[in-house]
Length: 101
Image (cartoon, rainbow, N blue to C red):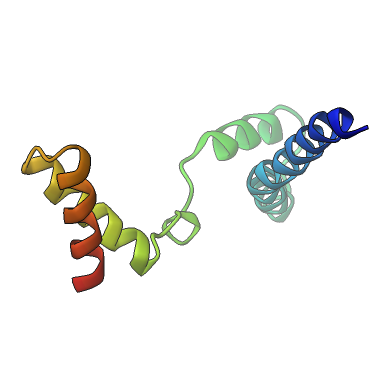
């Protein structure tokens, strides 16, 4: 019974993660569809518009922004890399760096 739990849990997590990934594309599809309807596009014109709209880069407000903690981690990681730190020295540096900033 215990051996069955892990695979079922993994399948559940996989299915849930796919649902979250699809929402960004679905939002883009909804927006493009609304724009095409507002422009009263039909037939081949609509297909061409939808194709270019869906291929377009996301707007600036859709782009993922980093949290302050992620920014801190990114900066400290870059500093550790320029200093070529590895192992325990890197671990200690990262700990101090993340506490300071």
